[in-house]
Each structure stands twice: as structure tokens, then as C-alpha cells.
Image 1: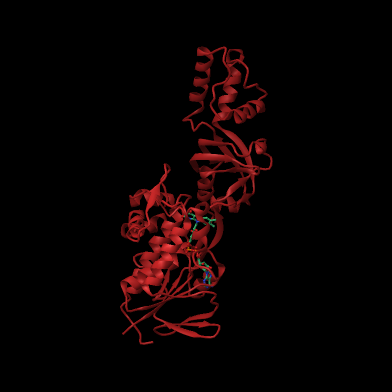
Image 2: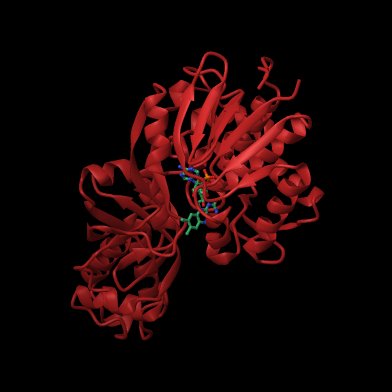
Length: 406
Ligand SMILES: Cc1cc2nc3c(=O)[nH]c(=O)nc-3n(C[C@H](O)[C@H](O)[C@H](O)COP(=O)(O)OP(=O)(O)OC[C@H]3O[C@@H](n4cnc5c(N)ncnc54)[C@H](O)[C@@H]3O)c2cc1C
């Protein structure tokens, strides 16, 4: 007896799950319902059009450390499907990935279209029935099946996968089915610092700084980018993810601390400056940072960065060390600008069986991707969540024991 499974949402989680479901159960009918007229829209624009598919981190214990929400729950799933499996899955279909120095993995073509076409080809080859521009009027669970009311048709399904990303519609439906929704708030954003004296230095980046929020035990190391509205770059995006909820609660008003040299402590910076002064008293400040930035930080201390070191009193070097170690800026808002922004919050993970991604409340109802209260930092971790939870949900649906006659 053949079964029918419906995937709602044609993003990476939904498409991947549909393919997996059909692979596990080739005789099943798999229907994918997408609200818009385009599948995989976010994949297309992802990674600046290059699609950061996953991250070269192959140890599940290390991998979960990149998920501010969902780390504990993803440990088991990553033992079933992790970045190594993502790489193999695409390679088996002729799509090869390359690893950048920071671990991010992209298709060798540097084009997200390669990933989109691979997934669409695979879905077509598997025989998935894709229906775009679908409006679901209602979705009910009857005794042993689901009834989906579309504009001019009803579908009876054995199982349903909700893979609608951060849409409030998906959250609302999950809530109707008895799931708790953790309030969605933005994650992976840049900081607005209107009072920053560095706004006109927009475009300058520093390859390794440590950023933290005053009063919080949250630190991130990595590159920072000066923008015309404040700060951006991987270190800032990561900090925003870990502090997503705290910053939301503070209405995005907090003090950003920057350790410009990613130094262990202030004393080390001070000693190095003193040593430079002793060794090269006639030379100007060593090029610790891009010169425009360094001179601006010095100017803030009423100090000339081009002056010979020998003419600077140690007290001044001490002040500079303090500034380089812990420079402070007032965050007054957030901006998601051409970045890999995601939503923190969504379906509460306590209601999900992470062996199959099936609801613990409504048998036959599955969840995958960003609809869940899972989000990763920047670097390919959010797509990996979509691949892993999509793969598990597709497996769970395909292997469903009970099968009604539809
Ligand atoms: C600009 C940008 C760049 C990004 N770059 C990266 C990157 O390089 N690497 C990375 O790991 N992550 C990246 N992300 C994050 C990543 O795109 C998401 O985490 C991922 O797309 C989530 O997948 P999903 O399938 O769960 O949801 P989505 O991709 O949001 O897909 C959900 C789908 O459901 C559909 N839908 C919603 N409501 C309904 C409904 N009522 N009926 C039917 N269909 C519905 C939507 O139209 C959509 O097609 C980026 C995000 C953005 C915004």
C-alpha cells in the first residue's frame, strides 16, 4: 500500500527532507507545497551568491559548539548526518565543495546556483511532486491521517513536515497543534554605533580582535569590519548570535568592548609598547593596526601616532595599552545587512523527538530547519542544521510504520 507524505516549505530543509523521504520509501508519494513561486530562495542568495553549504568541522562535539540554540539536541542528529555526510551527498551527485581558510565550505563553482540545481534535479529525479504558489487554508489531524485544505483541493496525508523557516504561519500552526513557540528574535546582525568616532573609517577590517559585551560573560574572537553605521564582520555576527536574546531584551542598547589586538591582557600590550620604545626610540608607533585606525585611537587619547616613541611618556603608553585592550562603544540598535541573518526562537525543542524529528505531541507531524528553536553562528552551520534535521525528518517520514489507505 503506498503512502503519501506532504512537505510544507520549499527551503533547503524541506527539499532535502522530501528527497530523503522518497529515497527511503520509493513507492511513497511525496508532495512538496511551497507558498511562493520559487524554491530554495535563500540558498540562491546565500553566502553572497556563493552558498556557504556547510563547515569543515567533522567532530559532532565540536560542531555543536557553533549553535547558540539547539547544541544539546543536535549532538545525536550529527552522529547520523554531519558535514562529512553533506560533502559526500553533494559529491555523489557531482557537486564538489572546497574549504576556505576559516573552515567555510562552498561549491567549487563559487555559485549557489550549483547547489540549487543539484537539489532541484535530485528532487525531479526522485519523482517529488512540487507545487508552487500553494495556499494552505487549513491543516487538521484526523484520527490516522492529516487533511490539508488548499484553495481548490484537499489532500489526505500520512505525515506532514513543517519546514516553513521563520514564517509566523508555521509557528502559528505548530502552536495550534500544541507546540510551544519560543519568541522569535533576530540573530546574526551587525551593531549600530551612531556615536562611534570611527564611522568614516568604514571599510577597514582587523583580522583578529576579541569582542565582548560589558556585563556579560560572552566573548568572540575573529575579524571585525568597520562600517558607516558601526561594526560588522564575523566576530560581531557571532557575538550577536550568542547575545541575540539578551540584546533583544535590552532593546539593542549595550556596551561593546573591543580588544583590538586579541591580547591576553593589558600588561602584555603595555610591555610590548615599552620594549618598542626602548629598542626603537626614534621610530613612530609600530603598525599594530591599520594606520588610519591606530591614529584615530591615538587621537582619542590626544596622542600623535606619528611621534617618535622615545618622546612618549610611559604613562601615555599605559593609556594606549588600556584602550587597545578594552575600547568601548555604545550599541544603539542592530542592522541585518546583506548578511546570513537567521531567527533565534521557534518551535520549542522539548516537543520534538530528535531521533526522527517527529512531534512528541502529534504523531506523524515532523519539523526541520529554521522553524525550530535552533540557530547557528555564521559559517555554514545554519544550512547544516537544515540538511541534518531535513535528512532525519525525511528518514522518519519514509520509514513510518503505520500507513493508511488514502
Ligand atoms: C541573506 C541570507 C544569506 C544566508 N547565507 C547562509 C549561508 O551562506 N550559509 C548558511 O548556513 N546559512 C545561510 N543563511 C541562513 C539559511 O538561509 C537558513 O538558515 C536556511 O535557509 C533555513 O532553511 P529552512 O528550509 O528551514 O527555511 P527557509 O530557507 O526559510 O525556507 C522556508 C520555505 O518555506 C516557505 N513557506 C513559508 N510559509 C509557507 C506556507 N504557509 N506554505 C508553504 N510554504 C511556506 C518559504 O517560502 C520558504 O521557501 C542565510 C540567510 C540569509 C537571509
